[in-house]
Length: 459
Ligand SMILES: [Zn+2]
Image (cartoon, rainbow, N blue to C red):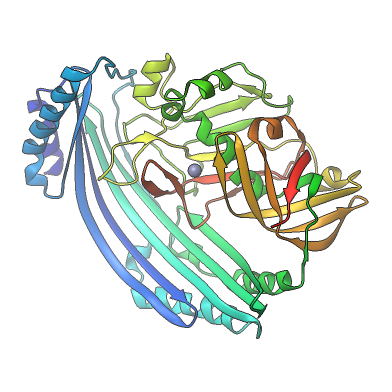
C-alpha cells in the first residue's frame, strides 16, 4: 500500500527530480548513572522526507502522516523552484543506475522481542559490577541503546529500495577517586549491527573499565615532549576518522579553497604502506550503508592508496560538481534531515608488521591506547588517550595518564613509520557529528601504527 502511494506521488511530481524516504524506527534505551536508573524507554516513530530538484534548486518537506505525501511533494517542488530561480549555482546530480532491492537484517536474537525489563536487568548487573568493584569507584554510567530502522527510498528515476538497519550499543564507564583532586575514568564501549546477543557477556568489560579507572589513580602523568608513539587500533581509528576522514568529505571540501588545494588527488600523504579506506558494507558493522540515502550502492573507496590521495567521498551532487563518481556516502541521521556527505566504515588497512616489530628499537616512547575524545581545528588535532604506557628499551613499561597528542594531520600521516598487521574495527557507543546531525552510526579502525616525533603535552 505504501509502495503504491509513494510511486503515485512521485509520478505526479512536476519537479525535475523527486525522491521520497520513509522511516519506521523502533528503539529502546536503558541508562544507569551511579545507583540510579535515569532512563528506561521504548519508543517508535514514523516519518518521511520529500526532496525535489527544480531549476537547479533543492526543496524539502518533512511529514509524519503518509496521507500528506502528495501535498508534501507539491510543497517541496514549490520551495525548490523558489531556490532554483535565485541561484546561479545550479545543482546537478551525477548519474546512478536505478535499482530495485531489499536488504533485510538477520539477527540472532531480535532485540525488539526482548522485554524492556530484561534489558534493564542486564544493564543493572553491569552497573552493579562497576560500583562494587573497588571502594574508590565513586560513579558509573552504563547505557544500552538499540534501534531498528526500516528505511524505504524511492526516486523519480525508478529506484525503490527497502533496507533494515539494526544498531546496538553499550557503554560501560567507571569513575574512581581517592581525593578531590584525583578523579579518573575508565570505559569500554561496544557498537554493532547485531541482535541483543551483542549486549550480553560483557561482565569482564565492566570489571576492566572499573579496574582501569582505579589503576589510573596511581598512574604517573606523562612528561611532555616529542616521542615515538604507538597508537593502538582504537586510537588510530579515531585519528583516521576525525583528523583525516572529515577532510575527504567533498561537501566540506568544495566550500574551502585552501583545503581543496591541499586535498588534491594525486598528492602524497604517506609512505607506500599507507592505505586508508571507507567501505560501505562489512558484515556486522554499524557504519554499514548497503545503499546510501540517495540510493547509491555501497563502495570500497580508497582515500589513500600506497600513500597517495586517490579519492574523496561523494554524494551525487558533489560528484557532479567535482567530476567524480558518487561513492555511496550521502547519509542522513533520520527522516527529518537531508543527506549530507558522511563516512561509513573508515579504516587504515593492515600492514605487514607484528606488534613486537613495531615496539622493537623504541628506546623511549609512548604506547597510547583509545581516545577519550578530542578535537580538530582544520589540520591541527588534539586527542586525549584514555590511558597509555611508557615504552623503554623496546618494552612496555609503567602506566601513564594525561596523555594528550597534538599535531598537524598531514605531517603526522607522513610520520607514520610502521603499520601493524592486526586491524581491528570499533563501532563505539557514540557516533559521528556533522552539520547538526548526531550521532550517526559509523565504525572506524586500524592496526597498531607507529609514528615518529609526536608532540605529547601533559594535561
Ligand atoms: Zn566524525
